[in-house]
Each structure stands twice: as C-alpha cells, then as structure tokens.
Amino acid sequence: MVDQNIVEIYSAANAIEAYAVANALEAAGITVHVVGEFLGAGAGGFLLGLPIGPRVWVLKEDEGRAREILEQLETAAENAPELEESEEPEPEIDKYPPAELSETTEEPLFASTPSRFSILLNALLGTAGLACIILGIFYAIDNHLLLNHYSKTVQAELIDRALYSRWLFEEPMTNYPWSSATSGDAWKEYFWKTFYAYEVNGVLYTIEIDRESHAAPNISIRYNPEKPIDFHVGAILHPAWCLFIGGIFGCLVLFFAYQFR
Image 1 (spheres, helix red, strand yellow):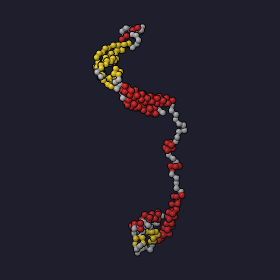
Image 2 (cartoon, one colour):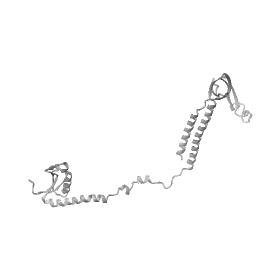
Image 3 (tube, helix red, strand yellow):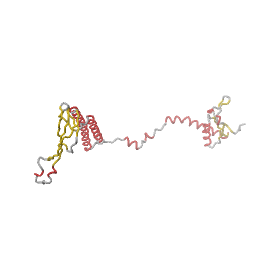
Image 4 (cartoon, one colour):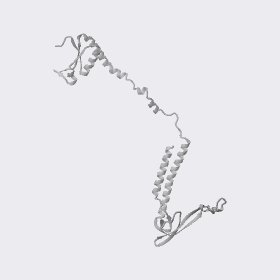
C-alpha cells in the first residue's frame, strides 16, 4: 500500500532523466525518491502493454514547489535549442588571432634585393658553368675526330735515347750582368730524346719523341691506317667521358650560381 503522504510528480523515460529531475528538486531542498529505475522503457520494460519507467516521488507537502521547478526545467529545455541556434558564439580564433599566426602571414613591405656582390658572383659562376659544358662538348668532338683519324693502335719499341738540355731563354743567363756562371745551369731544362720503331704491314717506321721523364722501353701509339707515319702518342679520352665530366662540373657550378641568385 502506497503512503498517502507521497505523490508521484514525474514519470521519466529512463533512469538518467529521472535522476536529472531528482537532482534539481534536491537542490531546491525537496526530499525526492526515485523508484523503478531498473525497469525503464528505454531498456525495454513493459507491463500489460504499458511502458514502465522510473518515477519521481516527493512528499505531498512539497508537491506545489516540485511542480513549479518541473515547469521551469521544461521551459529551459524548450528554449535551450533556440538560444544555441540564434546566439551561437563566434570562434575566438576569428576575433583574436594568435600572435604567431599573424606574424607568419605578415608580408614584408619591401622585397629584399640582392647585393652587387651576389649579382656579380652569380654571373661569374653561371658563366663558368656554361664554359664547363661547352668545353666538354668541344673536347668530345675533338676526341671523336682523333679516334676516327688515328683508328689503329700498335706498340713501339725503344731503339735509342739521349739526354739533352736547352735554355729556357734564347741565350744563357750568364750573359746577363746579374747572373753568375755557377747559376747558369739553373735556367736549363732537360729532356730525353727517344727513338722508337714500330711495324705496320711489314714496313718499319721510326719516330722521335721528346720526353721529360726517363724513356720507357716501349709505348703504345695510335696511327692513321692510310698514312702509318702519321701517329699520335698517348691515350685519347672517349668522347662520352668528355661530355660526362664537362656536364657534371657545369651542373655543379650552375647549382652554386643558383644559390647566389
């Protein structure tokens, strides 16, 4: 049997709603009791086709004040969405942008101009880079022509050699008043005059070469097949290597020129 001094003032859909109402009533000093919170309609509780939900009970003497508070809660709940839609506050970041953001997006009033030294260095490096590429192309073409002209290779053997000297100037330094006879040899340069022989198609050819270093017992030479006496001493760099070396150095110098733009 239910106590006549207790009245039911609210039937909630679930326990969360029931306790929210109960907390508001208790804050006003009203004694509240929640019953049936474990049989909420939101949890699927039904009895004889009627939903059973948690209910809020108060003392009969507090019924009037409790219903006033319930009306205030319902009015606040109805007006709350309208306030959110009509008076949505603007984001604070639009009103007061951070100092860091304003500093990063600020553009300088005057564009910085490169110094005269940077302009001159950029021009010199750019010219040097283009010169490297042009030299690579020039030597590639020249070596290609040399390889085609001196297309055959043969070993030449040493047959004779002699060490000789020559003056760096037209006449010995001893003829000048500030030079002594003992220091005259300091103005000479020494060479090995070497004689080599090589054979092409049964014909023996001799060549004479001036070498700064000691004469080698044999050397590799290139000759013209149409005229074997026409020869070239030393290796000829392949044209592809000329292009590669000139292009690499040219691109590096142009890259440094771009850094000083």
